[in-house]
Amino acid sequence: MPNINKPDRPGSGQDVNAETRKPSTGEQGNYHFRCSDAGYKECSWETRGSSPDEVLRNAEQHGRQQHNLTNIDEETRNKVRSNIHKAA
Image (cartoon, rainbow, N blue to C red; front, side, top):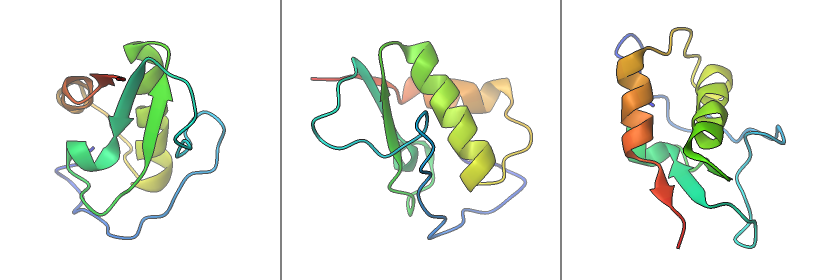
């Protein structure tokens, strides 16, 4: 999730919080999102959830904790929403 006030930060690390984790390939979730799809190309974090809203909440928490996003506006949320995909 890019923040126009802060440049991308390579190597920002992984979040180990249960709600915002990098899932293993076997984890269940109908929807999925990768941070790199929303602009943080160096970030390998991804999340899955049972609904787009759950995935968005996880992504917002990740953005605050790992990318120091203090103000997640509607434009940023829409960018995340547009990159949430139904899992195959």
